[in-house]
Amino acid sequence: MSGSDVTIGIGAKLDSTAKGAVGEMRETVAGLVSEFSAPLRSMADGKSIFETGTEWMKERVTELVVGPLAQLAMQLGAIDLLMKGLGYSTEKTAEGLHNFAVAENLAAQFRPLLGSDTAAKSRVKELEETAAGTPFQLTDVAQASKVLELLTNGTMSTGAGLRTVMDAATLTGSSLQDMATQIGRMYDALHNGAPIGVAG
Image (cartoon, rainbow, N blue to C red; front, side, top):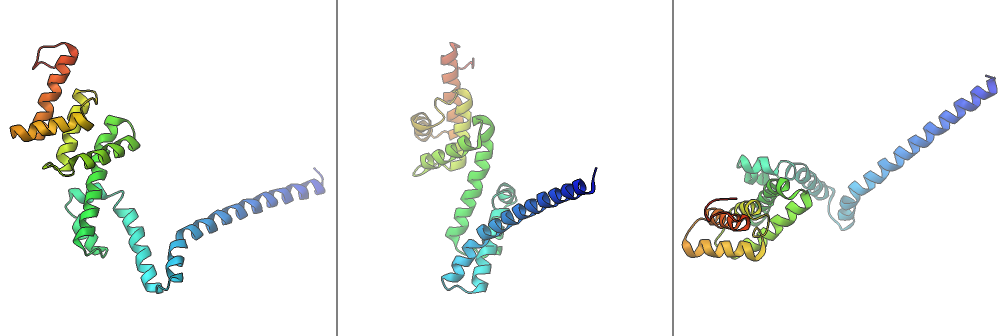
């Protein structure tokens, strides 16, 4: 190999390396611009560096802690303490974040049943709307929905079917889960041609 070939080869490698470095630098700059765009806008609106920095830190810590560890925080009963530590002092904000943790936990329970994260979150949102204005807690409604999802293949686990089960539990004074189990087993027996009281 001649000296000129070696020089050309080295030059090509350096050029490729330089292009790669420039590409990485562009990605890094784009990431920084995206990350700090909100703080910069806040400063442009007249907020101090301290106020802007405090808001940015709260958002980052909330994303890192409340999302992935919401279930753990709820189980440890530490969600209120965590929120106070982050400076969320109003009861309304703390309640909203607690509800968020509950919804995340329920979505994780529905995910194996429904097959996807999107379907699980959609189910929880629907159940929140169903539970609103009723004497039942969201967790109770979700448990009944899971039972009915299994026993009725989803036919009565949402919408009018679930509301019928809720009405029956209210009228009879039974727990929602017990009523869901009884009606679910009856549906399963009728669907499979088995005697009532014997699941098919």
